[in-house]
Length: 315
Image (cartoon, rainbow, N blue to C red; front, side, top):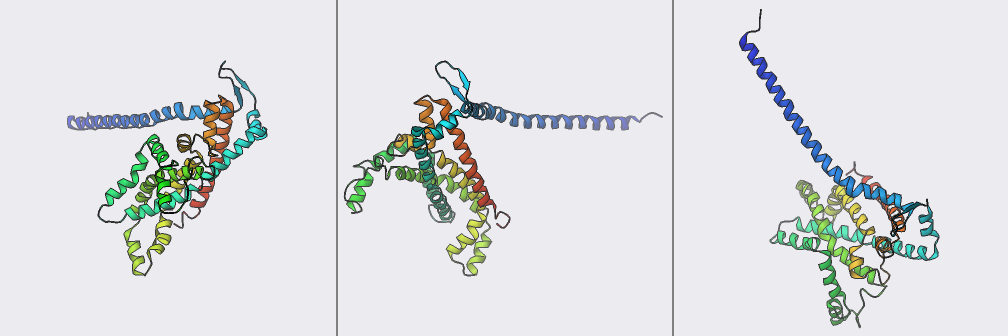
């Protein structure tokens, strides 16, 4: 006995719906793959390939005039650590880079305090958030010009400090080796507070208000609420921000390049990499120095994850 026409029609209709569903699934998979492939291609072309080429270049001797590359093994690394002249300025730049890490805790805890402040409801809170974030979106060249004017011998800072009696004579904030690096650190601190404040503010929005209300009922002060509620529950945000800030501190370049040009004992590792590559045209040594910097960054990242991830379950 044959299949009734009505049953045959329903079966055919369901098969057609199934085919349509499969085709839609295929479209979704295709779009997903395209969204993944395009960024991977761009990352491979502009990030991964240059990184691999840089690592290879650190084990070679590259002649920019002829374009020839000669494999020399670890000769570039030995030159960095064994050459008296090179070793002297390398350790000086490395020391300055690690001194620059001192800005990390100040910028992070300052950002947390700002985030706690603008997380409250008061008149003008949106304006306050915008004002704190303006340095982040301001161009580095504009920032450097403004702070050069402030740090001048007859600039605004020396004028104010002289008028209130803090100093008796002007200070060369960008020319004195004793204070020039700290002046650059302050500019970095000023620029970075708003950026990390936004990240911490997003983390604060995820903390239930009931915890603070219960703590207030139990008699906990604002400091105790910050120490025992806010900071533990911001651990993941702190891990991200400390990691980004540590990388930025060891890779500081803009402030050094625009404010001091590496003078007054402010040269850092990344500035020396730039100087070797584009002023002295020693690309192989610059590549080797970049690999050494990357290794230092990996070690510091492991320390960051170890410190902030140790109590992740507890938090």
